[in-house]
Length: 240
Ligand code: B1M
Image (tube, rainbow, N blue to C red):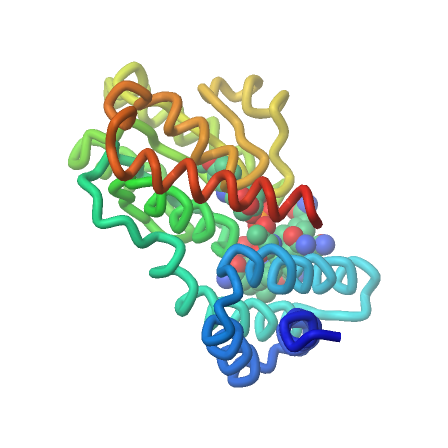
């Protein structure tokens, strides 16, 4: 087994067990060996978190285990983020994003932020547990091309509709593209609540945003960075 393969396996295990110092050290070692940040993300960290979810469903893991695994992964993301998002280009568009009220999951939303920034978008991340009025204020202030709502629980998905109603009431509904996503969300649900688009993952969310601001990003470095990021992710996913 090559050191790269060992690192992937060790990252998987240490993330699963929430060993943050080891995850950080392995991520640094992987980068020193010139492993691709997308490879580290999609072949070690995300599969490990999926396993955490499976164990939680079976009752083998509880909330504290999920939390320490997530924290360990966040430590790696802090290191990977600037490498994936590096672009230096003029923003190709503006994107406001947040996890909806009542929901504190943010790893998937943070991946969207990383991908969007990598594509050259100026992203305003409102964080987690975001109330409708905060989305409204951010759309008023930043006048984004897209506002994105993330929800990771079936119980918080209904906040999409509440947010859209709040934007409508503020007279902003027709001024911004509304995108939604998150693990339990489906295309049908997105249509049902009146969103403009749904994406199953960060790669697709970024691709859709790029299509939306198409002409503006056509010639820019940001567009190239996005294309590269999307291609890398697609390639990694296909191999996986
Ligand atoms: Co929670 N949790 N959790 N959790 N957690 C899930 C989501 C769950 C599926 C676990 C399970 O039962 N198998 C389950 C939800 C069930 C359901 O509603 N259907 C669940 C539950 C029940 C809960 C609690 C209620 C547990 C409890 O307290 N009893 C509680 C809720 C707290 C709350 O929010 N109010 C809770 C708490 C937590 C922790 C705090 C411990 C922790 C979160 C830490 C954090 O995020 N900082 C946690 C974790 C880690 C998970 C799992 C294990 C991992 C989530 C994750 O990060 N996935 C998760 C099980 C699982 O998903 N396997 C689970 C990896 C991530 C890359 O994928 O989030 O899907 P994902 O993001 C993707 C796409 O969804 C998409 O792109 C991302 C990247 O490709 N996407 C978008 C996301 N946003 C988008 C926006 C877009 C477009 C695409 O456009 C705008």
